[in-house]
Amino acid sequence: MTNFRNSLKTKVSDLTEKLEERIYQIYNDHNKIIQEKLQEFTQKMAKISHLETELKQVCHSVETVYKDLCLQPESLRLRRGPDHSRGKSPPRPSDSQPPDVFVSSVAETTSQATASEEQTHRDGEC
Image (tube, rainbow, N blue to C red; front, side):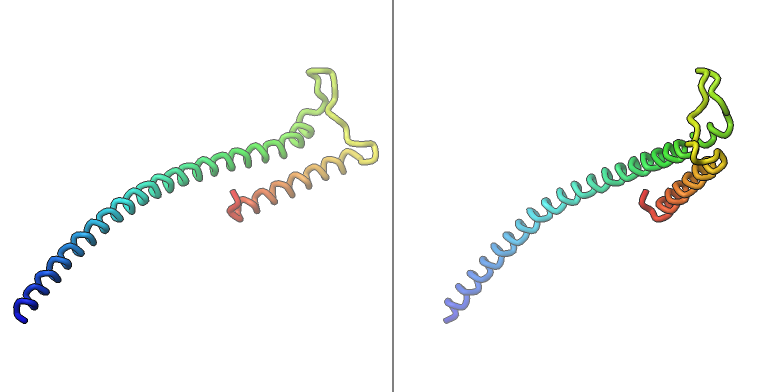
């Protein structure tokens, strides 16, 4: 009986040691995989952050261009008067609208577009 008990203890010890070694091996393998994935994740997050910064810059540029385009025709029409460089006048409003109504409708449209753009910017869409 003592012999059997000692033999059993030895076998259990050996199996425990083998199991422990196998667990450490699996742990190390999984740790390597996790470290690789974590490194990839970190690199992708850095790239996303960079792209986000670029996108914000592009969005700001588009917003600036949009505002310039919205404001430019009105300011040119009000400041320049006739285009003497080519001997032509700028396009006239339709005959059905007096000039002051045309300019006020352009100003109203521009202010609405600017307000809409500012609201979009405040809402965080850009």
